Image (cartoon, rainbow, N blue to C red; front, side):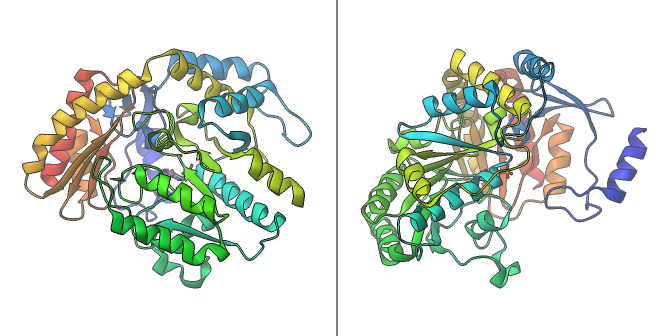
Length: 424
Ligand SMILES: *Cc1c(COP(=O)(O)O)cnc(C)c1O
């Protein structure tokens, strides 16, 4: 197919994320990707400021990751996981237990982030049921969150950002506390803390679990909060027999400056979800990890009732193992700290630009919040004209580049962000 034929067929037949059919603006046609660059069919190359939605932390066509997939392809690309097992999945589970906060012992391999959240919720519901508290079937969270697009995850997304008004009685009704006050370093607010504790205590008898994204709320609004509130949640949930789920699908694997955001709080949740960067952005894979206590509870009631067809896919596990090997063998922390410095000094001057409401940076995440809804098409075109790929949403122009992005490419990226803001 010629590029024109591909785009015509795309418009005729293909859904894109959160898009009308056909989309208002046609997508850009990518022919290949290498390092931090997306190569378009028309010959242009774009520095990827999105890491393909938080995933491609090592960039594209990384020789070690390519080799891991090729090597695994020579053995088997897939076998069912019911009644069978294989080294790539077992090695991955063992590594995840090693690198995640202490106390998480058991790993369920799911095929996407949303499914891992479904599994995490199911673990908590089954645990409460098996330990004699079946009335504990609701979830609590705070506003401003995002946990995926399938129905249970949607029910704990921010009610406004998650468009709950569209879903009426379809979604399970969960409990929402106010969003945590902004700022990783802003002093804890005792009034907010008391309200948070009160919200959990008041409903504890009907709560299976509290679910939150630690430190950084991603697609719900790119807001950061003080890890202190995570310790507060850990204490109040433990005191009342409510489980605590951390969704680290966006924050995991170094993005915020620590390998997992939970480390900043020094707490271990009962269940942890990881995804996105798990395979270095190569293949879809996620995991829900739980403690021995949660697994023991579930076992008392029988089996964990979940089993995707492509569970533990060997290709995905092999490349996840290679990606974790790159992280453990390299100095990702120094790279993320370098990116944080460059983003901070590059984005800070935009604070005084017209229409800018806030600028915030944490780890390899840079956010410019506007005082109005972004004109996504205009911002995209302006960034592309500077050789940069960005995907703004709501009132946010943001970037979370691959960790391998050089200072020179970060400069290109920053010029794209500035150009996007100027027209947004
Ligand atoms: C992206 C994301 C999900 C959903 O993951 P998918 O792989 O898109 O299903 C869930 N939670 C968080 C925090 C995410 O960023």
